Image 1 (cartoon, one colour):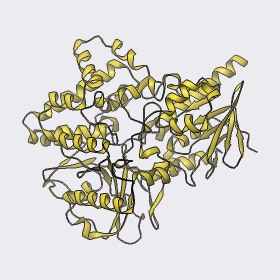
Image 2: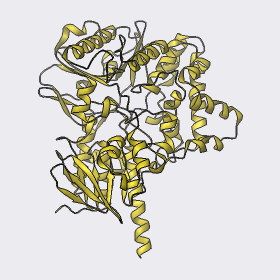
Image 3: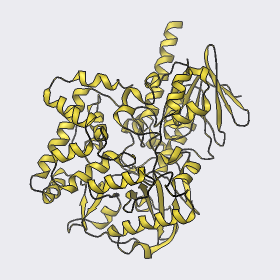
Image 4: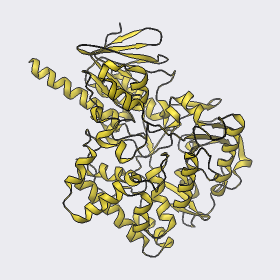
Length: 535
């Protein structure tokens, strides 16, 4: 009964994407998930009684190819096209990330004369660099050392050094004038990372969109999701972010994928011929000639593999990867929505409230927040990303209340003066609400229920090691052909039939589904080559 062609360990969104592609190809697939619910941080979670939504607030990152190829619309996935895509407040006035570049440019020039041209030139230069580097998000990555060799233009060599070896602060300080424009790009590049913008290589987050644009077949129209510089917005899923997992689960079931929850895998089985399957905490075995791990590589190599699988060296190096997580969750149920302060006169308040909001107003403030967290201090000015999912997904609450879902960053997993407890959690959560009230005056008076979740709770409840949503830092040395290790960076491993996927592989974290798609492609390519050899 437990014999399959492929076993996928981990039922997060990448594990489900892998399983859906393999099931669609006619393989007998099982997904084994430790938690009682699928989806990980992207799946539904009851933060409040009867109020279920996803942890993640990343409305624009899902790979359109995954949506199209798996026909997720046929499985109920719908999107609301946000415009603007983001709102961020500076000194009491709101910047809006309109899809119309002219409206964005007018705001940038209001920050500093000529800032729109400087901003556009930086974005264009990064796009040209991405095209010249020929890095695809949809293929196994090259080694970092190979990238510079692909460049011939001296100006691109200079920009490469600034992005890959210099700091985000250095890049933005030399290219832009206003603190506001620098902060816009800083939050885009860093967000969840416990990496100050002064860190060498910290600007590499700005390259993900250029790499996506450089991919073969990438949309070229100015209205395409990938071309929105501030937020490559695929859209807001109807039903909250967990609707993505619901559609993937339905897609998997359509292709007869077995979905087993509440079954922690404790060991990867292998022998002289390669991988043999997995065994769960209850001793139940699932056998297969191919196994895909879609869990954090540190957990995989530390807890599920032994030294004999690939050698003690690889195992120790991957297992020793620092997580340095910092996520803190705030969910508020409010009896009514406050008006946003500082909106321009031509903005429709309802449309603005439906998009993502960000809190973080200066490079200096971002540097201080992250630096303090590295020393174990929670920030007095937490950086935040948030959504009001009930505006685009009616029915998440009964009646007329709304949910405000906020991810706050740079709350240290290990505070310097003692562990997280109820009092510390409540204090930091209320500090987040105070900061949000600058954008939403009177917010605290409208809250009828709330949930604050500290980093240790997030690890325990959602399976995110040290509350790190990206399964490790996303700096140049941790990306490309080194993610999570040079010997396993292309989804394949030295253990025959064993593959890895998820946020700990290229191209990294966030709700893209790209690692899952790439891993499925590797499995199917290997099967095809094997069948040709046998023919």
